[in-house]
Length: 262
Image (cartoon, rainbow, N blue to C red; front, side):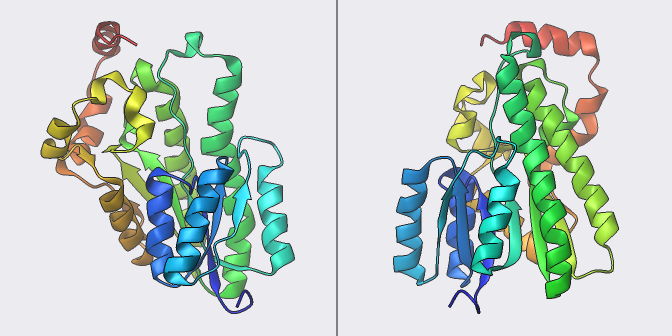
């Protein structure tokens, strides 16, 4: 079955949006390589996918912030002769502190997780997808890429890099069988946001369309990906934020940051 089935790599697959991506793509008949630092949760999901959808769902328990993370994933796919048709760079982390108060190790980890490893995965799999004659890459950015909010500053900075290199890769791949889509989300209702003080009123945020469920977010992202769209920005308020947030003066942002208790 491994020689015939098409595979998807989902990073951060054990929970949140990663789990939703895995479930929706397994339903379509794809084999899912579940990449996550939480091996137990990934194994539980693997069992569910194989029993419910009768597809292979191998688990790779790995810390994606390590320098050899990309090499480990690439070597496994090469050894198993998997045909990887979809790469979803979903894994993420959130730091809710100013840069000066963040440990250097955390700064290094978020850069590696959001920037270095996803970029290197794209660099490896794009040529293979071109040889196969078909491929999709879904990268996850955020409206915070347009927002210089001190409380989540490093998150926004790294997501700005994701937005930039994804556009560059899409331009480079025009006319080829490989498509790169960037999902630009606002607030998605996952445990990742539990530490953000100004996103605790979830019912209100859902009503305003600022926050959406992970099921809806992943469904929209996959639809955009399969339609080979360049970007997805769900929510009218989020689209307005991209226009107006860059206009906020630094003094206003400094004042607002001082009002937020971490």
